[in-house]
Length: 547
Image 1: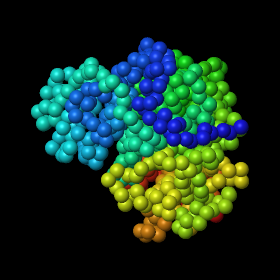
Image 2: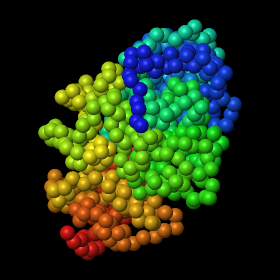
Image 3: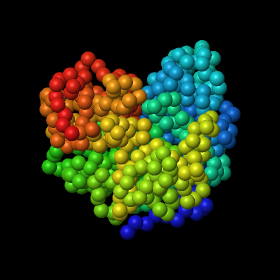
Image 4: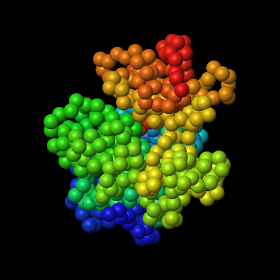
């Protein structure tokens, strides 16, 4: 039976990092909390003490309540200590994508207005290169630092300090008092369609992310999370680390995802829960099956999304329950499959009615769509402080997203007769051809049914009928190792499975598809690339499409 926690002020205030850490340190000081791979874990008592030291070191350099502190670190224990240490001061973390450099990095550093940053040594050179462009940043703590890296920063008029100054500082006596509506951090969107936007995240939003996992996955203090997704992203922070620590479990942190080592690392960590995003589930499923795949400690895998053509077999093969949901940084997770719900391939769970109103509406008129009819997903909260407070320095974008008192996600979906959310596509990635709106997600799913295809990305390219007339469909395809496919064969395979207007005119076989570090396909890069010399064209090949 689906059951979600009643949201009270006391519960929501308990989501703040300061209250969470102080409570766990008092109630279970010796219990394992944070573990780097298979090393000896820090206990909750040790974790709390180290985070208070980081907070003390930051305070000694003037970081105060409400300040923003930029964090640019790969997965390592220091990123958790930094995140928690910043928040213990009532300051706001600003985690930065570790792939960013040049203007991408300068934009986020300047936009957030942070004066202090905590940066891995390997990224110091990037700050040196943009030092003249930085408006507010004055101080950088270098993690894993050498004296050379600190000297280089100092030469660029940025005061450089060692991480050891933070971790060895005098600890603060107790955290600043924080509440669910205080700002926890500013998290930037991946920026695949333009300059990234900073999402102002209150503790209520990070907490509702975590509470949805706790309730849907039925977490207890006995659970262990295997975390390999990047911790500069809200997925790893709010959907993996935070729910486990709110329930008093153990987090096993790993550097990055590896399809070939995923199962052995899950076994080594003793994980009972993990999270996959993008195509990670498909990469895992694509490994050579073994007779003992189900011999692992996992009980559930959080998936965004769960490909409907493999999810049932994935559950059987690995002996797990796949919990799919729908959400985004701005709103948390608003639909989820609960552990008690039967699997429905292709569905992203049901709306969490206790916490949210979720509606499908006509994207042009705003009128509600009945069950079974696709439209735009809009959301509004039933409790205060559980959605974003806005986009940082972008009041017009905030108003646009919140028009008519609903948050507009720009995603397309439908609710079926039973109330399941059936995701269709990002509105920006919708393709319009022959008067029809076409889901790139659906095209990709069909192409990936071909036994030789490993991955596909479908997107719109300009029609040769003239600018603004309509779109043509192109698909970039990665084949399985050792496979060769004639593009005409793949085209005919698609024609057998798709309406005529959705069959790709253009096909290109590629070795890789551009992605963010969070494994999201960068459709803008594909659209900008357009038609290349390697692109197969149905019309140029003289292949007739009926319909």
